[in-house]
Length: 522
Image (cartoon, rainbow, N blue to C red; front, side, top):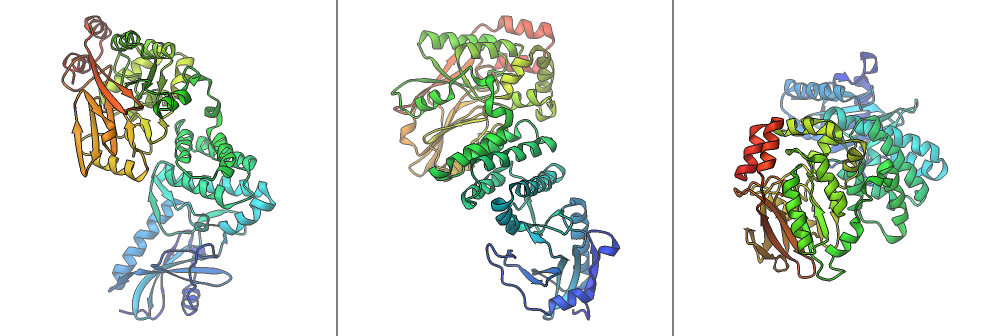
């Protein structure tokens, strides 16, 4: 089917913003523009662009329609979606047209000043203007994330400004939200690409992002997520001062957080790297406010003269001793990671926890913690990384670091991720189960042996189980010992007297499910 003239379906803005069919016809008669990286126009192979000094037309050649009604319905649906986004210029008009005998759809908008060209100018000549544009970019980007849980393509060529200085999105596509992974990669590209982006300007850039994260209420965790993903980006040694400045700006108050002075994560990192010989490290996870269980483990470690302790998240939750457990770990100098229960407690958002009994425990716990306790929890790092190893509460491939689980349905994907990112060993908690998922000699397997030689495998996921609420059908306290020089891990289990703990939980009226989990080890 062919159309005598383009069918104008509608514009993002008001009827007065609609571009006429005559303008569309005139542009379609011009030669399409070749798309090249870094030029005024970039795009995907399925898009043909026609432009003049005033207008830019995109023809979607990947869609062929047999009927005008089908094409129109597709365009109407697309237009409805785009109007809700609030990211496109009001003049953006969708149409259906016959092109070379084929019924196709497309859109046309006012020609805007491409942001990548403006940044190239302002980052050298006008830092104030550059940072103002960055503010607009972050506002558009994070606003879309918060309203729609989708992300815009971070490439600067996908944005443009009009004569009034307003910034708009130019690309046709949005993408699944990835918890700041692509944003961090884009910022690292800027550090490498723009010579004028020195340490001071990089810090100012990070500060603008930090403020935007706060303004859009992305949560206290957001700056640290960005920082962690920035750590994964490669920059040459000569550019590391820039990265340091950027991360400092993004981190804001978290960059200088006195609450974590209770432990030395750098020293533990060197030990886990094997730089200090065969110094054992205790791996504890999911203590969950169970002081008798924690005390039993700490006493055992003291007896064995094991001084270095890594806590893989979830110190709080489920149990009746959140404050006492924090104090015990601070006194022990344990290096602690952030878990999902700490995050929910600090954020004050119990909806982040799905279990009703777990939410009850967090609500009960919150009044017991003072401002210093909450500050300590808020500043816990979500991840540690070293020479071929990493430690998280959740799963290595999870961009939030503490929400996803390692278990039978996910371990293969996580091992794949480790192979792609050069990680040999990942220490994790969250699943409350002891075991090692290992890949080596062309096989994946789950190992539940008490002693495991990790050196024989290419990649391993090491779960020490839970101190405070194990779920391996054996009541008690689970943890592990790791020997970094030989890369050996020893799973440990301790029995302890939980009668007083059970009596206390019943006296406080804790949910019976939480009590049964302790007594049954489930």
